[in-house]
Length: 287
Length: 292
Image (cartoon, rainbow over all chains, first blue to last red; front, side, top):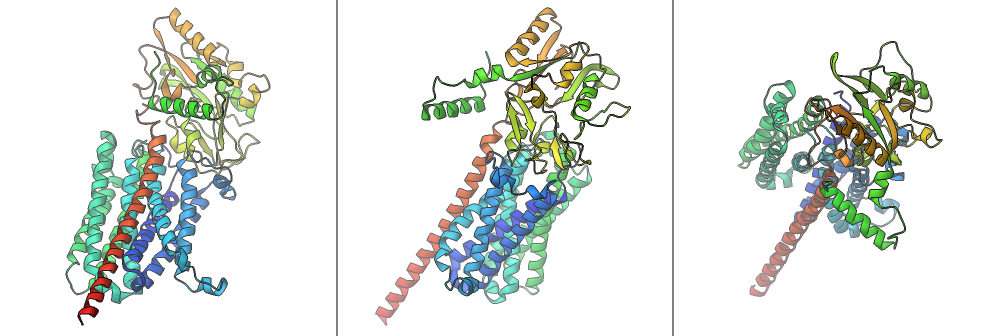
């Protein structure tokens, strides 16, 4: 079968997932720690809407008729994952933008008041829509005919990957914008990353248990380039080393922590992209 | 007895509930009756001689280019072709839209560009956004993205296209082009009850034949008559329809909803934990102040 959906869709699903996970991480840190972590929260919110905007822009560019990109909103089919998903990601993007604005001076300059009153509703609603966005990126594919896609378990795997990659991205941003608070908390942060890695591994096992044997072999059997990249980059480097091994190694104070953290986050992010890329391409090739 | 799928059951319940809500019971046509009345095709593989007159008629009616060689795959401007099941042998197979009773392409289209008219599933090119979701969702790989130069009103560029059952021509009292020109009446067209009755009559007259398409995906809008020794699913011509295929319509949104619920619970957990810790810190502060 021809490749109908390519790199733009893979990037869109990846960035959507990172944005969702980054928002959820920032929002949960906000609920857990509040004002003390203002800087990482603000930048986490900023990147979640920026990444969402980039993802949606890639999706629009990929459309055959980009000038009709508003049709799913003007003539919606809410039974369609893409139709319902368009609403979800747009609402999520707006919530992420508001969340960022809450922590900036912009509302005070423009509206002459701050938006702090919206903080809790935006956090709660934003978490709902962030999780829905993460799951939607997988559910979108699960309605496709390729047997590698045709299971709702892909939604769970993509959600788990969204949380892990978004979290990795967020702690990377955190380490850059506020090293002091980051260093105070980094052992716990590493443990959370490892827990997310274990959850992703469970979601991967669950997903691979429901796909037909022929496709399981194509994905995991190392018999083609896609499978080799999937197993070595996503499973080994991304989950086992980047998400579980390195964060646990970093749980004790060591030298070169920031470099290790960058390496861990980079591995998780590359692995997350490889997951989307391989599932999209191999799914179509083996259909 | 017709097997009732879970989706049919849920649809029946939803339809009954809606009908009761608007007080429309008894005033409209039931879904079963609508199914009987929808238009369908019958393709008799035994009667087909593989002349591809249907392919040429289809292209001619739409003004699509015809090359010397007959097509062997569908595209934005090839909506139908006939070929043998295997290279040079096996029964003839008509490859075109199945006009499914439950068309997945229509379910997934985000812009509502795929519609049905009396059972004929068609794409409205003026609404199509070119996302190619229908191309990915169709088990039979029927819709194709027309990335070619636009060819008239029927194949504008950068939208998905497929056989529309000539619905615009049927509305004007004409037959679909493929049916009109078939020299052996291998392709028939009519109301589903008539088509099903005709297919059963042909099969009753020749016990070596059987019908494909009566139950698949809500009943295909194209019924096939094959010899019993040929099974298009077993022989890899048509896909095996996964048992869970229609159920995804329910489980997909449910999974998204549950994910959102998970987000709410996670946020709630962190919120409560933080508040409890804050209260504890405050009470410790108070105790400390009182003690001091």
